[in-house]
Image (cartoon, rainbow, N blue to C red):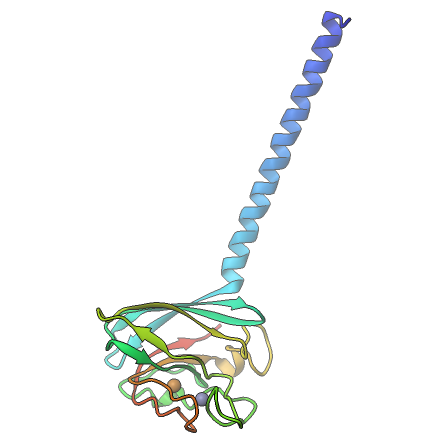
Length: 190
Ligand SMILES: [Cu+2]
Ligand SMILES: [Zn+2]
């Protein structure tokens, strides 16, 4: 049988255990919060995308995925249908032609095209589709580049550029995939 004193002791012990647990949970929540902030700062990159006149047509969010990157595109004001998107080698998006962005990012000196036997450039990616209302919210993957350091880094030599073209990439014609004009661009810099 438990005395009143013993009961009080157990109750008190229980209370202090409980406040210990709350303290621990608070610390964990705080650590998780800090980790989340750290991740968004390091692991995500926001890119502004502008058209040939310098007007914003949307954005891209780049994150590390499967050893490469995932590009979450959110754009508007484009012609419906398939469009090429590439990573070009220079982080300079000067309209109207965006020629300053240079050729496709190609540190290994390969030929263009995901379907080319002599390719691809590491900046080559799948086409994306713009809806009838001119918008696209899609994810394009690139497993050849990295957000980390190295020759294939999207930040290599001062950065690269995300480029959208007027037409689709045929995945084989060197050097640009016969993708037509460069119509929108976003510099990728650290
Ligand atoms: Cu391109
Ligand atoms: Zn290419």
